[in-house]
Image (cartoon, rainbow, N blue to C red; front, side, top):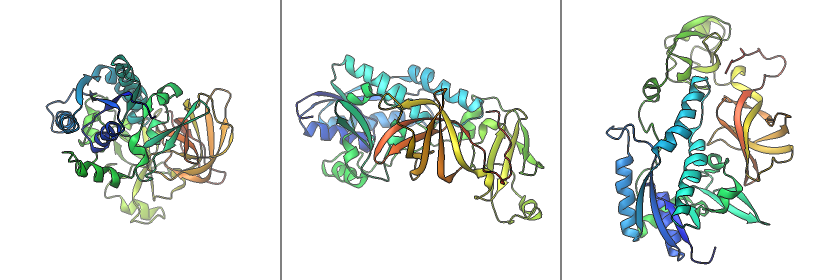
Length: 382
């Protein structure tokens, strides 16, 4: 992209989007900043940082000499992202709202708004890259392997990628912070935001409790013995170790042949009987899945990749896992992994890669049964 264009940058108040705006301005583009307000239920809360984030974004815009517009997408966010987030939790699944936020807000509502402002491109501070080949657009991993965010962007379309720039995707995070300090950005040392945007750093269960009904039920082990009571299936996720509420049960593990020091993990949720199943030990067979099925698919090329050997992530910050892709007649797909994957969680995204190219993916519907000989897991109704 060598000619001067009008580029609208999503300025979040963080260092990545700030350096994004700086790099584009350096390249000679007309840069406009937009601060997206996506959540407003807790404006006065200690956990909601949107007011401070806007002040940081405004300070960055001032240093860079660009205009900043404050746009409220809270209604869109509530309808398109948060409502779906609650539906998924109510159904016993564990959704990834950041994936949905990118597809529905940052690269749809925000893109539409930017186009109304006369933008030819939008840009964000995501660590990913876009490559054009023969008139088609590919989504590539960010060059910094520790910061790559292509997983969260796998639902983007050709039309969205054609208008999107990711300048910091070419850089390491350390270089981004160095640039920010060098040009005197006020947020150069601001720590990265963590967690789900609308929850912030607050206790997750406390937040969900405001929106979801909780129906207590039994906690059972892999032998069907009741060893406690859960507070509602929506409040647990597969692989969860902390906050299960069965402390002081070491002797039970020892009694059934396990080590008394091995921790307990959430392994299954059976909605039909409102039962939470837990197992002891990180390597328990119920926590390992050799295959999965995913639906609600989205492919960056617009068409599914050919079946065969690829790699996949079933959660962010996971190494690419070699697998074999097969397509089903109903539009879903299955992945069979070379090595069983840990705590494959319905509601999370299974994202496919061919080397550095992100192909797209789908929402995990189920972990497929363990191989013959391993104990059968309770079937979830999720």
